[in-house]
Length: 239
Image 1 (cartoon, rainbow, N blue to C red):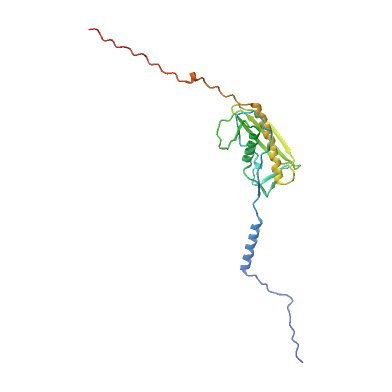
Image 2: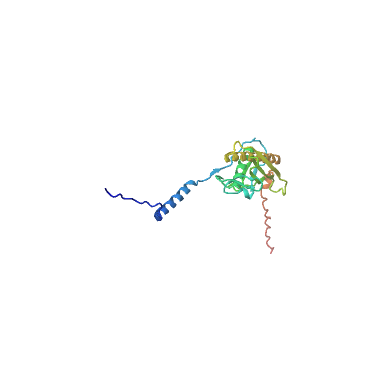
């Protein structure tokens, strides 16, 4: 009879097996690569022009100064809402250019459509001419309100360049976006800028064009020739 051999299997492994160091480094690099692939560029949005009624009248030239925008709105991401003292940002959405410049350019385009006989230009544009009227806009709210509506709060002024201090028109405009997306909010805010352009065009038409100084008559514009005295004849002394 052959002897029976018994194998004893330990109940636990008392030692520990460490993975190779190269494996740890490779795993860390893969994690970093996967994290980098997960991040993406935000979606960029712009304001669009909003059509209005085109009417004659108004100054010959109108300059839109760069609007004043509250500092809390000037951020890398779009401010969706500001209920109370807490800001809510759209972390996957951003404006395509600085907000103040974009508001000024969009407002100028809206005004040009409403005032076809007026040359409308922005403060930062390439056109340099004397303005018969100046538009100033100050914005303190340009986002969604607590009820999800697009809201614009600010003050508007359209004046003569040399008129001195004047009263501003207080603005509080609200529009309902079609959906809850950031794109729908940008469209609703564009609609509110169109309403600002409606009010600015009304003020500009009421102002009317500045009178152009009448041209001087041709006779008055001609230089007066200098008269030369007649020569005095020389008289020779009588000898």
